[in-house]
Image (cartoon, rainbow, N blue to C red; front, side):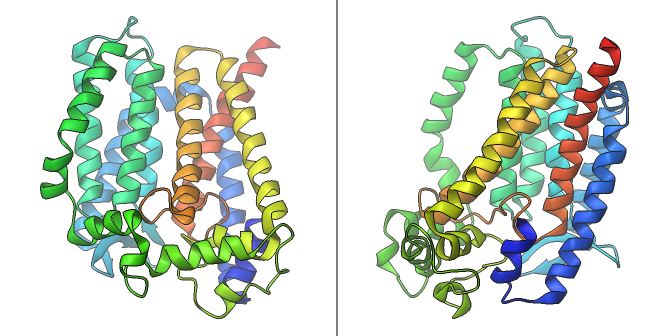
Length: 339
């Protein structure tokens, strides 16, 4: 489905489809290999994986390829790696390995150690700058803490502190263009031909699709270049315009089926580590979908977030193949134990 949608969104660019197809094939092979590995391997080497992914981020900051003022990509010659896409998988696995054998509810010390690790990694990604991925990484870490048995008292206190810290975060952590995106969310019509252009054109594309859509390759917003980033962040707007409400629902039901299956595997996992890992990676998948869709329809600011398995981009695609390879490993090896 991703390749089908991408072919239209890329203005029928064959080179883009060939390149994405190579990532799909490689990702499927990688997912199959990872699914054959015992879950204990991931648990015992979780810290090593996290250290490697942090090292990749530091290498990106030092030697990365700069695009539009952001250093997010590490040029490996044959492949440009977005290192933050790897750490969003290794962090939940590490936290699951660290917390799986801790007594419930998890202690303040273990919570503090986990939060320090999460905040360090989030800030490394944020200064690239990459607000969207840093937000997803932060959420992924919090999911594991919540599933591991985080105290509701701690959750309430943290939420209160976060609300009170909004002015400080606004003035000290957000770049000027990120603040502008938030202001644009509140009133896209304030600058319709500038900062409000993306979200305005996205809404027009989605609304004009109607029930059945305009037809494959016939979306005016995408093919007349009104809609920006059609291959990546705003590809859902292309899908809604060309396939309409029905096509969008088919895609959503596909995602929904995958999510339900993941939750089933999490509930029936063989041990607490597997349960935490499957649950955390599944919720990460959901969050990425939600942020992309919410961004495209104007519920949240534009943060730059690809739609999993649909948008163009090798790093994002491979990261989710890695995540599902780990999930499948924990599902299949449980069946082997039962036999």
